[in-house]
Length: 258
Image (tube, rainbow, N blue to C red; front, side, top):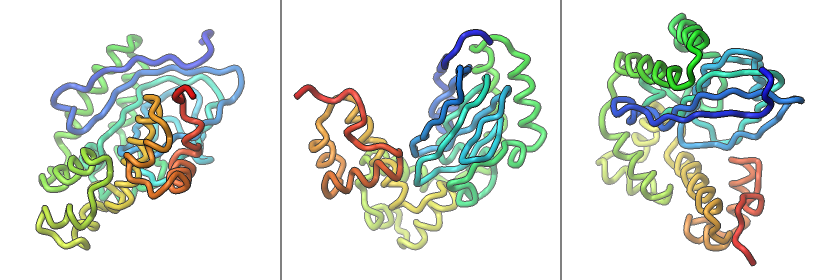
């Protein structure tokens, strides 16, 4: 592998996969020296189907790995050449794919084989044997469709509540969601922890952080973002950015011209 750096090709998930997968990305990375990153929290779960040099994730060496949603940033370290496919799962895609309560995967990094058994090893092997990145993405799409369809079916209430929370940018209150569903707040929290892995208030915090990031990257002023996203003040926004992204709003570019 002679070219240094990171190369990526993205694909839009097929219609059947779209409720469960946000993004598919084939990649290859190789650096002259180890690279350490702080991966920001996001309202979804990441599945890495990789081969090559294992990566360090929160101090653990893994190749093909996954986990649940997080309420903090994650530190990764790449120390050698690696390639594969990165999958961004919705919480419900992860719940159906892994077939277990998502609270057991919150803030965790798990080798894929621990959750998906021999199927995952076969999938990584087939990806490694497929030279074309587009073919790797198509293969991943097809195999994930089959596997997720075989997983436990989910009732519609939580996907509906999650969609409302996303639409509000994390500003919809827990009591409002519970009232709309005719549930107690306690029941809503229990269902969120089963199917999403985070309680609704924490999930809303991660969603709000993601919306603030997008606005800052579009050039919106920090004070305007703080008000638009519902932070109490800029200090409150700074605290969330440090916990969820290991950064501050002022370090997000591009910034608007003075």
